[in-house]
Length: 273
Length: 322
Image (cartoon, rainbow over the protein chains, first blue to last red):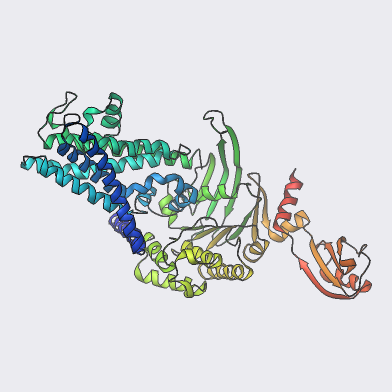
């Protein structure tokens, strides 16, 4: 009972912080609208890059432009959602320098939960929307033959993929406790992972398959579910149901994330400071 | 009230490994706090003083559960700070002079509302406590102003209120008056005195301001190079190190240097002898006796007494230990 009361109290606390962040960002309406346009432009430019490639070839890694839109849309939408929710976590050095982290230690909630709910970057809504548009167009023009299984797959994939990227951000935050100027290193994995995920994994070099297929399983956020939706065979000799493993990949991603976070905070409280 | 000490520290030690740039393995061990032991009883107010880098902030971070000790025991409000951090956070309030608890883009009142939610205060409790703090710290005029637009004095009062909103048993203040004007300092000190009188709150304070210690802290801990150099009353501290007071006199006419007054040292002469500075030991003579001796030689127009500087007191302790 006391536990339930504490949880409810904590939820109220997180809601109070988050709603204040939302209000603060909406307070400057003109600047917020410009931010939205800017964020949407990023999605447009990144998709244009893919489009230009298809000006030269008809298929990349066995996928047509319409199919790649599916991969790109899924990856972009789920990455941007994770970025919207917890993207601020990978700016850990700033939090350490500003003393914000020490302030989190002085409050009666878990430090990671406070960090995750300390901010929300609303302009990323534009990128989520952009990703969603590309995904829907991809679904329509690639001629997906819908079955109840495929609807279920899409419904499972989207939240699991968001969780995979969120885990990536949190792992980055944990690692940044160790690395001075570690943001450059972790960005290579976080943003590199997102970029790789928006391409067909069949064209990845072997090292990328290992890193982004297994360790940071972003291949599960776009490419593998897209293959299943399009009834295409999975390369690397994997079975057709591999796409259903996205929730497993999400759990793995969070295990890595929490492990990195724990090591990071241990280091902060123990050796570093 | 419980008789458990609010702070109990024994053999507390904390090392840092300082690595030269680019060397991950070659590190030099630096001892920030070494074998520190002391106890703070409920309701006490303790000044924790020492030079920059003496280990004050490291100690406070260990008391609050931000840093893990290398060796030794810490209990804050009877809890283990690192393991019981979340329970401890409900019992202590910490103000770091340099880092803010408040949301810089929100009005003060809204920061308080969020903090009340964070500490699970109920609506009635929140109203009563916020009202009390706003009144006592005279924050009514700027409650709806975003934090980033506040003056330093206003922001500091808001920081103190933020740390005390959940009525902690122990309040730790790290340099709370740094950079404040005389009036803001005064107001903050008066508030802390009232808060202690009303709620029996324990207080631990690091400061460079002798006035803070004199007004607020009957007991003083001096830390030097990570070890405890003094634990006792402030007057005892001044006695131990022979801290002298300085009498500055403005004279009617240019006067020969005022040397040879008993238990007094002539420090300097300005404006052809119109202003002179004399140091005296309050244990051996009084300001009145010095003044009387000066008056025999020249007519005094104005005078001021300089209090011993905290840096000076700490320097003398350090010098005596080496």
